[in-house]
Image 1 (cartoon, rainbow, N blue to C red):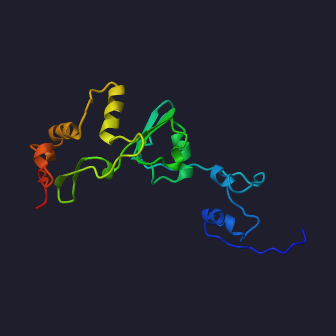
Image 2: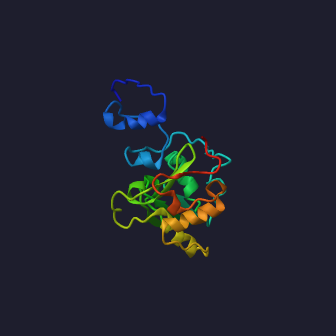
Image 3: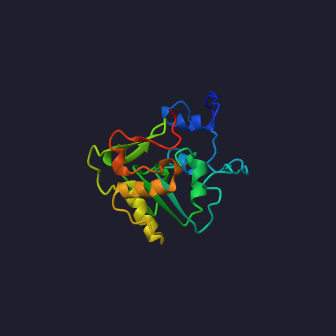
Length: 202
């Protein structure tokens, strides 16, 4: 071609792609991926390599099969690499996202159910010492966002479960009956000072 060549080494393909907009290179050798194709133009492949992906044995996606509906609550898949995540999620016939934000990988979700964050809701939390306390709503929730317990109540009811709740106190009442550490506690008795759970560290 009659032009000088300067080789620029990178220790990872991702770093080559990340440097695409810098103008440091004109031609690069990287694998073809949809995300990369939106930024750089690929030639026909000069070599084809068989590859696969790994999923932890305890991964919630390991048993996902064709026809399943994947429900993701508050971006539980945030730790997955986007390239690895795409073929896993594609197994599901539909994806339902419940969360305070819509993650990039879920733009094509069949349904998005927005929920409030802690500042936009009221409820309880348990600290590291095992003390359960109430928190109060600090600001108005945006748009159609609802408390998580309300969204899950409607979802479970739609799936045939008996889960009709109208207040966080009702949800806590059910938890107090089913979670041994909360036995004997009530939403009203907690107040703002809270109470220690069964077996809490002293």
